Length: 290
Image: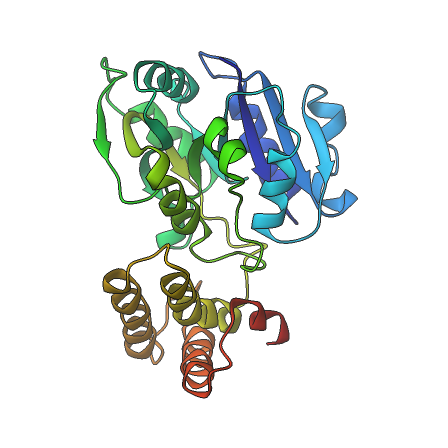
């Protein structure tokens, strides 16, 4: 089995370098590492420091960059997509290969995030490595649990179903692409199972640089779930509570926001999304106009 690692990146080469350095610790080495960037500045110094990494130039937007990577994987059986600020535990790929070989029904896999800086001010690489070092050992690589969807910071795909059915990330979801991981996972569900790999662990730094501004993210929080529900990849029973939950949280926290979160900007985006839905003008791509 040939397994690649794919990383879409933009605007943070120093963090990308930390992630690539961590990949050298994998007990099962990746057969290929592909990094899709938008500009030369995104990967400054990477080619010299990591000569084995394949650098691909792509159009901006997470789905477009990940699809660019998929287009280059004709010789691979699976790809693990990591965010450029996700540090996997050394056994991540080894666990993935073990499960994919034992479970031919598994089309989508996702690991366990031991700490997620995206839910707070973010984590430094040193803090992430400390979390990984303190994690208790796991002996059973085949330990899995059903999952509703993969978490995009560490999601793996068996490539045969994507090729057979022409499935790709939805490029109508621009920029940061809120919920692109749910969309792709659920569209692959008819062709296999989605599994959480309990022995494949890692830490998501949640680096704030390069993130989408609050107003754009807030718009996506409301509009993207509705767009995916209409499309059929996200149940309405999940889409409406998701949009309502984010709107409520942003409303309650806007007067006293966390210093690292633009709560008022997100709330403004939420309200603009609601207004566009009421007018029949809502579409994920409208965040490029905000």
